[in-house]
Image (cartoon, rainbow, N blue to C red; front, side, top):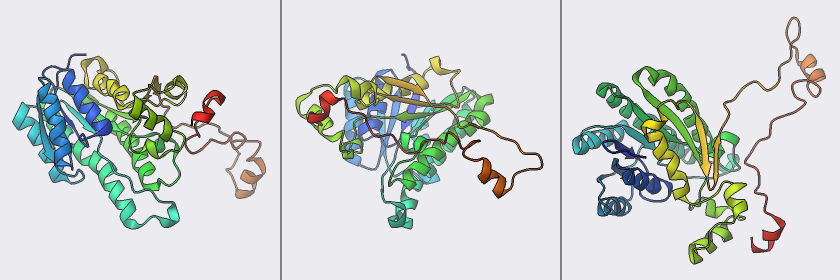
Length: 308
């Protein structure tokens, strides 16, 4: 995939998935603005990219404010002449169950994930529309936003909102030839290391270089951060010009298209519904096959149980 001549911004690119996205975009030929709150981490990514013959600059700042978003876009234009791709990856975690989550826990996560995605995408869209040659907004979501996850009220809400924004912006920016998609990644990161069933496998792989077992890569769709980066490169390329408004999952050996919410079951009552008629018909009517909620627990093959 050739991204020569394209310029990308990747937020939260100092480590993990963000770094993988930035390095993959650069390897495909794009110039990259590397954003992170950790100056040393951002500098290391820039050094890695330029050391391989690529072009990169860093902007050390927390996303969320309009000022930082404008600075990211301005840096891309000043250093490389234009902006073609915005990848909104930056995020933080403040996990608590509902009754223990503070206002600050909630606001901090929403500010970085949801507001940060909004401000960066808005700044990018303004520039791309001025350029008149289209562009790509690639928004990073999560399975938690699609299904919910215990202890992640703030994170799941933000990630669900990001997918909703992708669908909305795909409509609004279509005439400007700007595509907008949400990526739903699953990879071995510091966060997935906290999941008990995954932790020993990830730690063993890091220690020995042993690849993840096939069931983990296929059934759970969990692999390395590099496994996810190919989707971001594809969505940044001309090959994805007809792909917009989608939520696309990737991880390990698995690539998936998430469905959009829709009516699963419908019933009608002449004159409308009362609480009593709903109660009388619920279990045999629209509520006969309720939706699941929460991310399903991993299914470990019996042969691997002892090693997990």
